[in-house]
Image 1 (cartoon, one colour):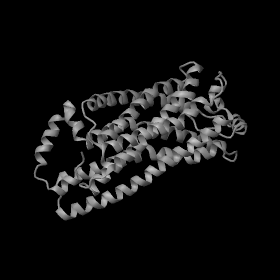
Image 2 (cartoon, rainbow, N blue to C red; image 1 turned 135 degrees about the horizontal axis):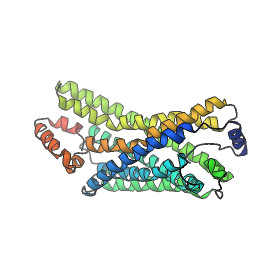
Image 3 (cartoon, rainbow, N blue to C red; image 1 turned 90 degrees about the horizontal axis):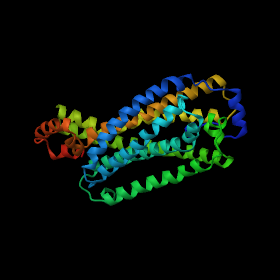
Length: 336
């Protein structure tokens, strides 16, 4: 699953021999960049884990944030295998492990994270639009059930990609699709389409949520005629989730559509195919940087989180003292 390639059987493999990939960038530059992301991600997410251990799961918002953190941590731990495999510094057996396990887990947790960001946006939408209405979707039981369901769904979808494979050899591990059985190739294609559906569904829903939120923020801004820095910070808080989601994941999914098409047809020019491969790898790296961007969401949106971070406690106390004079309408927009 590390590479969405050759899902049309032997026809695709003949094509790959006719159009070999230029892997100089992916073998030299990207392993270095991924190494930087790995160490940064380990540092930030380990700190976030320590903080969240000390925060009770007494709100839907905290539950979604904790699940996002778990997904990011697992993604981070899968990166060393990709780095060693792409740089060709490890034996071919590791490449087989990457194709059949670590890359599958990597993508599985990436889409868990995508859905969690969607749930965070939905939670913020409810808090701002219907702040005082008690509904089941605002209860922690709902958040736990939905979170467990998402993890179970992605596990069941991903499991066949770990099982439906042939025995790895030095020649077959050069491309992950070469390891897959005919049923495995078919299932891989189904999973690719399912993941595309998940992303675009979450993306469209988030656009709808934030369109409504933007109108609410604008109406509140006009009503109170405020021009102070507090309102500017509130606007940034409201839209940080959408910004992180769009910057990290949208480019990869925009590129993945023509890239997947180039891999399932013989009509794509060889030069264009290599350009799409490089574009896919570049945007996949951008998607991976999400593991370093999500801690920004915790810091900006979650007051409980910032109160537990030693170097930020003084800023939280200063902000709290300056916020006391704001109206209840403003408090509806302020995030947890």
